[in-house]
Amino acid sequence: MRDALNHQSHELMINWATQKTVHINALPAVLSQLSGTISHFALRACQCAYSAGRSTDCKDCTYELHWGMPCSHRMRQLDLQKEFLKPEDFHMQWHLPDVS
Image 1 (tube, rainbow, N blue to C red):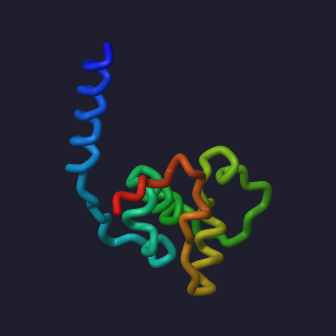
Image 2 (tube, rainbow, N blue to C red):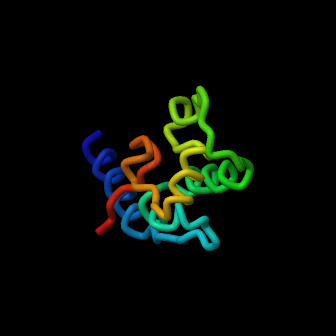
């Protein structure tokens, strides 16, 4: 049993060590600082939400609560202020492990 766990652990370490970071091109400016720290799924979802939403008015928006990602309204507001989203704006489930 111990050998099996050691082998499985070794395989996981090899897979983790050989992963490479791939950056997404053409992200909106508000998302541009997050490449490599937030998952591709979350970045793509935010990119789609940003493209779909045009309003900066956020009335009873539950997107952030349900998904753990900023809503399009908030991204638009930050974009108008020339600010960027931070990793802290995303739930921990969307964070990539630190490989440094």
